[in-house]
Length: 136
Image (cartoon, rainbow, N blue to C red; front, side):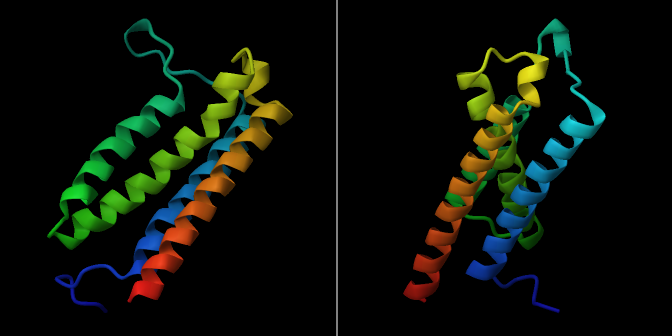
């Protein structure tokens, strides 16, 4: 077991962001395609998972930008960054390239658009990890 006072390694950071990102994308898409499209209307306004993703990414990014001394919070911020990123990346093509109907949620354009953007996110994360690992 690692010392809770030690900072996270680049590999731990990679996995704490990557696995929640991929898991969230897979679970969202599985739910949409099997369970159907459902909506959330807080205060009577339709809120897409893009908004929930932003609400997760922003505090996580701000915490990470200033450094985190508590290991559990550093882990939670990375996990939140992965989950929130997946939610955001999954919705970009859906909201920009379609009419944003329920049918569009489960369309090939929306699915493959989300898959492409999540893949780009994974590649960027991997590149940053490799550069960090190389720098020691």
